[in-house]
Image 1 (spheres, rainbow, N blue to C red):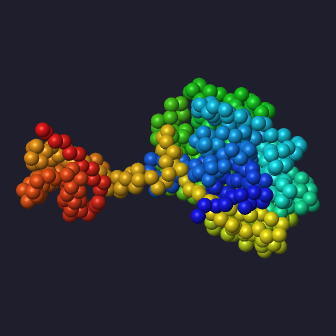
Image 2 (image 1 turned 90 degrees about the vertical axis):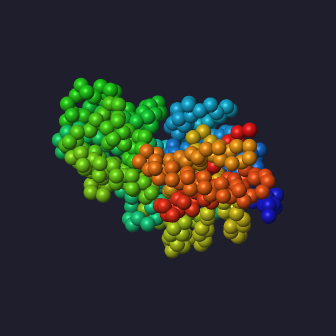
Length: 557
Ligand SMILES: [Zn+2]
Ligand SMILES: [Zn+2]
């Protein structure tokens, strides 16, 4: 049944299309007075069921239908899970983008390699309310692990919504201002219908910890390192970058950056007035001039990304930096669930090379940028919403925050999924429908639905390899020669050559028998399905596997 949206023309609606069911890929929509506003347009990491794909973005077919009424995209901050989808989805969206100076600068430098006509980024006024159609927007600066994170107060005649974005309360944030709790309280006094809130760390007791304390700890740890130090972290965490650079300076080390996203972040930060009070960093190609004990390298790839600087150093294929025994590698980052396997693989490779590994598990080298339970409670107290809508989490995080919000006296909590359409009203708020939603896989230059048959094929190839059978048939559809069988990923072309030849003979005999019995014409698809059946049986008997089978038929006339 198609949704009759005209019925809700005057209503305030909230529709998450991404980020409510996973941590990543945040895309949220607000509707009022017939117009739509998008908050964030992020990307997410692909899971194992999409072989060959690193990234996914949200299926936005729903809003494409209302493209003419989409007034803009407001970006809360410069993290990939909030803006990484823009370069892939831009052609379908084509509306103004609103961002702070830093987020704009970062996005622009990231988009230089893509040709995106008509892309317009408007610098948001963070000191004064502004209008986007029927939405009055006020921004409130909150601390996060990226600078200039802005919570949005979306004011409409149907009520006010506070969309928190990613946040924490940190008395010592080091870069940028501390979270503006006064403004949150003032908005609370004005009356808030709904709080749409970050759920990432809802299972963490207490508070998330201070960046200032991490800086001190990093200084002490680095001071004790005997040889070269490599620190890998999230490039977007400017406060952490500054801490690491300062720790390097204080311990008499030259600092260099390794990895494209670090350079991009560093220059965007400089352009916007951040990272000012530090000495120049050296070019990574110049590190050979310095003694190992006088070097500190900041590297991308703390999540084990195979093409990032950290992985390249570990695999000995980095152009400028090579690791040696007694060096120290500090993972100043969280081990994100899902990436743990490849991160632990890096720890093991380093240990084998006699390189010291320091992580958040054994030293105080990282704090999260998301609110723990006590911070969430504080947020509820300040904003005092009628309704809490947890987002930025998997179903379990969303469910947990809904329980927490209710236990703190918030009247209603609505547990959304991607695609939930929520009617927000002072009298009655509820999920009224589910709209089209899903994931699109970024497959090289293409965007493909995650259920595209190509991924089923790849999974089959990954699990059991592929068998390619090439058959040459004469004018009477008899085999002109023995079929050629190739088995990449299943059998070795050389070591198993005799066995593969036996398969070809067996197939040839079966085919001859079948051809002799069959009268008249034999369509190609019948030949193909017969061949597949025989090959499947032979392979299953041999190795108990079911590979992907492809049959090529060539006919000699
Ligand atoms: Zn973030
Ligand atoms: Zn986020």
